[in-house]
Image 1 (cartoon, each protein chain N blue to C red):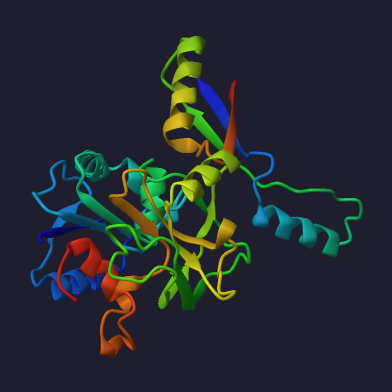
Image 2 (image 1 turned 60 degrees about the vertical axis):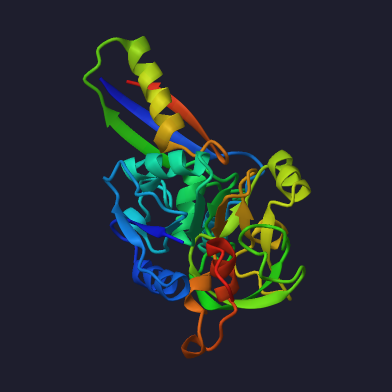
Length: 222
Length: 79
């Protein structure tokens, strides 16, 4: 499975994402720069975390209007798998590829800690290697992860099983509505999540709870 | 032509920053401060001389970038 990682000024988790994809897919991902208008023929596109454009205006707002994001939107429309982590999630909602918005944490504090996540839908291409309702651990590190959507949108995504990850056991770090940590689009091929599964994929990380997400998305054997 | 765009949070959207400011104001002894909501102001200079055209452009700027209309309203004012 071939993958690509989107690079934007101000991202800082790009190397972690490249390392995770390289280890799990067995080959290094291609990298695409913000001004690129073409993305190579790949099965999966990842948008890493960080602080693209210094979080100016709104987190992910400027990045979402860069040429590379038009190319990502075209690929997503053709069914290519897209994962946005942390700032990548913020960029996907700002680009209109995922519903809702990520607001300032309710505590107003930057949170950097480990949380628990419930697999709210194990029947997606990102979670098929997990058990329904399984609780996994994952690191989070963000200032603006407070997921919000209007009542109609919220009812729709809850009803359609688009909520894939939920903060579990009272570990919601940011005040997200319905404890939402990660969602997919209506077609199910675009995932955004605030936690960092790429930072928990091997024993050296203290666990591999995040590995099955990439194994699911990449379709590789566990 | 000069314009001012004001972006505010929609009613019903939680504004933790506004809340913190509210608490800080009452901490400073400003009694009787009700709800505080934080927003953004953009002052924009335009080469356009047609007011109607400028207003249409400014609204497009809000829809495409300056406001996130999921949670924010905007108002356009041309000087």
